[in-house]
Structure formats: C-alpha cells, structure tokens
Image (tube, rainbow, N blue to C red):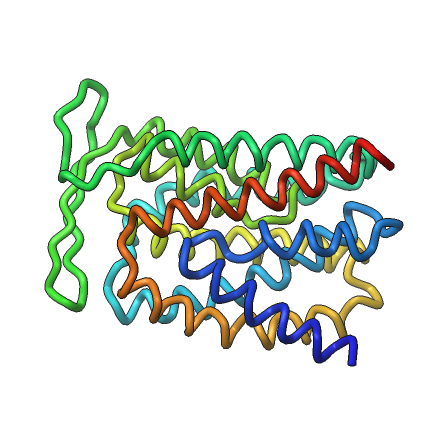
Amino acid sequence: MEYLLLAVLGLAVGALGTLIGAGGGFVLMPILMLVYPHQSARDLTAISLAMVFFNAGSGSFSYARMKRIDYRSGLLFLSMGLPASLAGAVLIRYVPRAEYDIAFGVLLIAASAFIFFRPPNESGPKARLGHRFRRVVTDAAGTRHEYVYNLPLGMGLSLLVGAASSMLGIGGGIIHVPAMVHLLDFPVHVATATSHFILTAMALSATIVHLGDGSLRGSWPMVVSLSAGAVAGAQLGARLSSRIRGRWIMRALAAALAIVGARILITALWR
C-alpha cells in the first residue's frame, strides 16, 4: 500500500513539476522531510533527485516534440551548472538536518515572494543594457518566441542553481525558472521547457554521485514507485502547459512554494 501511495504522489508531483518546469522535487522533498523526519538530508535528497531525473526526462521528451526547448542556451547553462551539481551532491553529506530544514524553508518562501511580486515579461524582447545574446525559438504550433538576455549572467546563475539544487534535492527548477523569466527575460513556456532539459542532466549527474556514495542503498522500492508515477505525471503536465497562460503558471509556482516553505519552517522551528 505504501508504494501505491508513493506512485500516486509521484504522479501528482510529476504533473505539477512539469507544468511549471521545476521537476517536482520542490514538492516531493518537503513531503519526504515531513514523513521521514529521522532520515538524513543526504538520503532524502538522493531519493528526490532520482525521481526528478525520471520526471524531467519524461517532460523533456514531451517538450522536445513541442519544439519549446532552447537547446543552445540549455547546453551553455549546463556547462556551468553540471560541475556545480556534482559538487553539491558531495557537499550535502556535511550538512546537519536541522540547519538544512531551516535554510530550505526560508529559500522557498523568499522565492515565492520574488515570483509573486514580479510578474513575467510577456511583451517580447527588451533592449536593456547588458543583454548580449539573442534567441528565436519557433514551437511546433508555429508560435515564434524572440528574446535577448545577458549570457554571462545566465551562466553565473546556472552555477549557483547547480550547487543549490543538488544540496536541496529539488532539481533547481524552482530557482532556475524564475531566474530565466525575471532576470533573463525568457518567455515562460520556453523557460519551463528549457529548464526541464537542464534538470534532466543535472539530476542524473547528482544521482550518479549518490549511487556511488551509497545514499540510495535500500531506497530503490521508493525510487521506483515515485518515478513510475512521475513519468506519467510529466506527460500530463506537458499537455496542460499548452492550455495555461504563463502568468498563471508562475502564480501556481509561487503559491506552492509559499505553502511548503512555511510548513517546513514551522516544523523545523518547533522541533
């Protein structure tokens, strides 16, 4: 029964994660922290990142068919984010659980506030100082997405996202998508799709590290159940993304972050 419930959880988390480009780890990780309060941060992040990999891979497949992924930008961001993701997967073993919970809760609430009070740009490319890289993505529906952004800033953000994502076990989408939309002026639907592409590689690299250090030993039944649901959920989330405006996707992300962040922080402070 436990594994059936985990599969249902994976389905719901995978659908939401793909819809907003966050990989689902930002929802799964708080739930794991609440259900398994005595398990180490390292083991929980390993389980979460393994599920994020399967969720992001499934979602990326759907977004690739929709032609929404900016592969060139994604590969450039990965050149910085991937090494940082590997480092974060190693460093997490040295972080105590109590401090981890507080930092995680504060980060989620701060990200929620930032997204809520900064609506995404939907007016096309801007000619602001510092923008250096112009991109055009035409999706399968024929919609042309044109935008320009500061490439050095994007790569620097990817470095920070890579390390933070592996240490928090959330895949980094909740940080990367808002950064791509608000700081780099990516269209929301391109940002979510490209984020999923990046998440797949980052989560895989971190999962390989955790396989090597034994963090997933004994957790495979959980990983398989969660991932099976997440793969199916990713397909549902990708389909829903075509029917929901970018502004509402970001609002859903902000609301989810605030709820889980507050829950974790309250639990950590009262423990």
